[in-house]
Image (cartoon, rainbow, N blue to C red; front, side):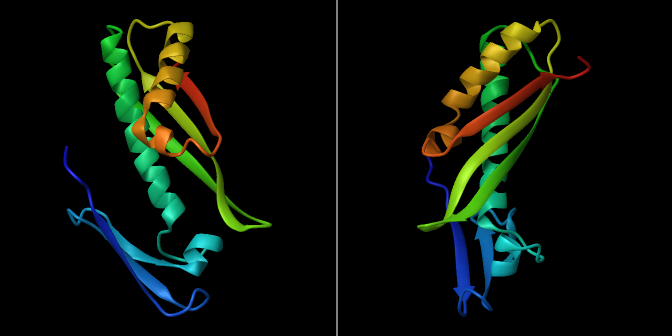
Length: 143
């Protein structure tokens, strides 16, 4: 299996420094700062990038699990909400909420929920984030 890479360069101290990130393919590239991470400054942040990775991974895992169960999804739309909070030991990622809506012909709600929970558990990014609570809010489009 391939090894994927991304690079981050940081200049300066935490409060006033800035950074640039770039994925190996160049499809993800941008700036980040303390303000973009802990406030509402412009640029990206690790939590946003982690959320994008988790949403992408879960959408793929759910599509796969649905196909394995005999259902072909028209679409799977997932948003990952990643929380970061300051505690006694410093900042920590404290949870992820996956909000997904899928358009899946011929599936009932109970079967869909069961498959979606399995995809959440089996998604490689979910497994990597096993130390934080992951909540799934899954719904079928138009229902």
